[in-house]
Image (cartoon, rainbow, N blue to C red):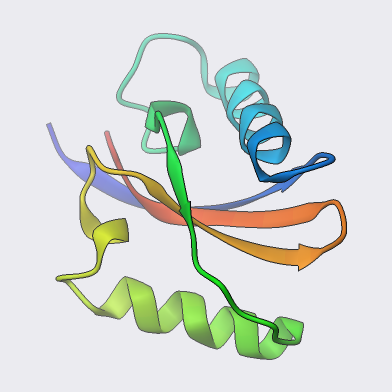
Length: 97
């Protein structure tokens, strides 16, 4: 099996709620068959602390995705998570496909 890059937005009162909501949305959209290449394949996340505007957040995501030793590059590992606003998180990484 391969791997695909993904990036999605999750909404919730905290990072865990946002992750769960984003994962449930991906399962609804992609099905429960596995190997979707989406956040649906992730079991956890790690918060990447930053206090940036949207342009800087996108640059940080790109930096992480270009660093092949970064944890987000592990298709079986956790997703990266960056807080965008009070109830909004962006999740990204590589997932099994």
